[in-house]
Length: 319
Length: 264
Image 1 (cartoon, helix red, strand yellow):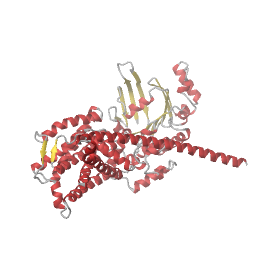
Image 2 (tube, rainbow over the protein chains, first blue to last red):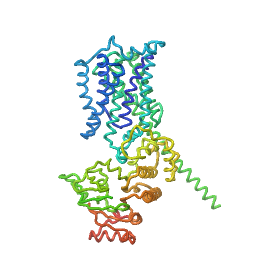
Image 3 (cartoon, chains in turn orange, green):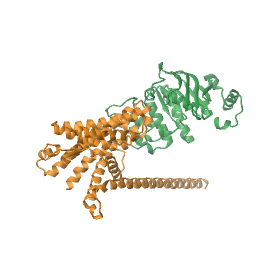
Image 4 (cartoon, rainbow over the protein chains, first blue to last red):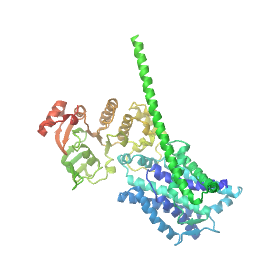
């Protein structure tokens, strides 16, 4: 059971890394996510049902998500509409497309079919079933995390980070910011769809509604992670995102499992997630206000100490 | 180097706010020129810079850079030739990234690849470059730029701009937001870099003394036009008082508030 939370959280963490790229690194409020997550699940499921290899299925899922991200970025770039609107447009269109991918149905099961999650117990046969799933997922997540860490240390990755912080600087350095946005959004949604493709195999079905509320859940996980520790290093940022994702899933598990004592139903979890984000925002704001107030007081104390020291020196010279 | 032919810029046409910010301006900038640009607020100095750099599209006219017509070239492509520094010290650097990450994006112009250039050789280079700012930044490569003071950020912006080796420098009141001491440091660095890399430069300033002391040419703008263009010899004998008098005689009217447009 505990392993289940970790597997759930780890699969989810790949999606959260995608949200991290759009929201935190690119500073692009992207809602494509709600659609591209289900796209990933749909593409992976249909590919597996049709008999393509498991790795190919996941790559196809990622590619489909990346295309969705590229479309959002292109709408934003070419029509000069806010990223939020561009994302909503793509997300809405994707709902129809996802049902098309699923062959006109809203739900496709993956029963009695080899998926990556029926393979893991065979590959790690020395482990128990649930541990095999956990180890397999962990390896995938580590691979993704390390690749992303390396990417954001390349010149291209650093310039994408700089774009999110200051677009004018990127232009001044002779880089086309539109192209960077396309790359960043493609990468972000590629990861989100990959996560969707994994989840479909883990839970054994793809659903056109799978992505609903994903953005907010991702943000909640990012914010939980940000409470853990502060850093500007990408490897630590992705690490805390993974921790945040697992903690979030654990919290939701507690809500589902023990929530009925306080008459919570599974449908209340979205409300809880929203409240979690709001509370996180309040705490973050209070903390940053407190720390800057603290810094101001320290500056005053420093000035005072310097004046006193100067006065002493003057007195000393006069004597 | 830069040739501007009859460029104009109209903002908000057909509205009550319609404004012709630049009106049929001609300007020839020769390679190696260091031109100081003065003029009151709203005279069109910043708009002229925005047109040259490509931030705004022109309403009419032509801009020729290094013999090529760049009138409709996007800003990021012109940036290969033009380095620009703004008044606001936060516009030139990415606050949420470390000093070394900022500098690596400035190491070469243009689209970046999947290379990892941030290695120990380049870190040494950055330390050496930062050392000439004498601000102690060489020991803070991993600190976020957001932690630096305005003066430090502007000095870093200047360093990053020259590091990317532009041919031309547009300085838009780049010391105006700094305290006098930091303004002096940044100005000294500016003249040092301009001389060392032989950069053709245009510098907007509200400081008349700076406008006279620096550069080999001075232009004055008013109402979207260049009303005065002084070459090196004329500029040498210039004083703040003479400059104000010239302005008055051109305008043929007494300005009630010379102060806010020509503060020495």
